[in-house]
Length: 116
Image (spheres, rainbow, N blue to C red):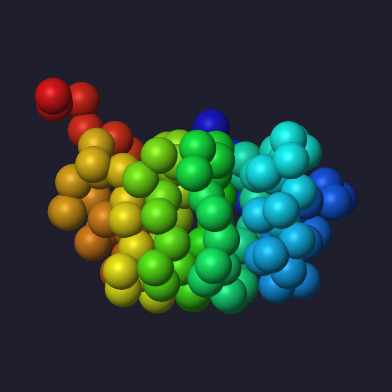
């Protein structure tokens, strides 16, 4: 069953929706927790986000600006990056180039390779 992305009332998520990256990064660095699974990030500008270790599983990043964001330690299983701006974005090494391309161009959900 595919999980549908949603706009949550989580205050940390709302900071991202409002483009307040510095506030989000600061609050997170001071230990504030957030649930960013199954969230709708469609069309947001997330440049400057400290995304280290965030679980973005089943997130929807259609036309989101992710340029320069280090998502290498994020969980992206089931997320879609259709039409996102990903120049300079670090993605988890477990994601193959083909998987990323399929999601970027066709909106498929990201699946991690079972190869080691």
